[in-house]
Length: 99
Image (cartoon, rainbow, N blue to C red; front, side, top):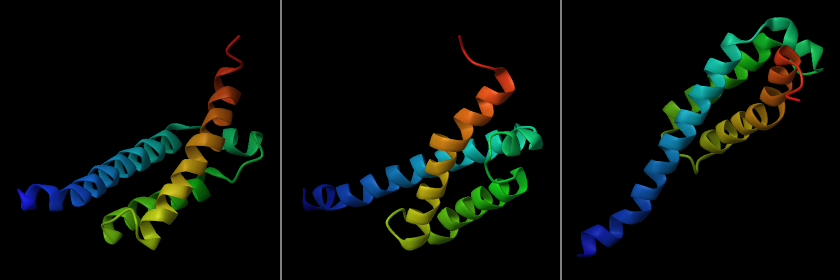
């Protein structure tokens, strides 16, 4: 019984890593598919810069191997900024307002 209870924190960290990995892959694929002028139209960093940031985030997750290390936290923050701030504005400028 001690083995199962002792492994729960490791399991939680592994699930968090997979979620962060999936989130970063999603953000990177989204950035790849967007037009380059959409980024500058909404006053954000250019597309190549965001691709480099997100690729570095993915590399940080792969090399760091954990979400609680410096590379993992930096990757999650960078991906979160892209998904929460850049992605909605880039989508809106390309599709127009939803109403």
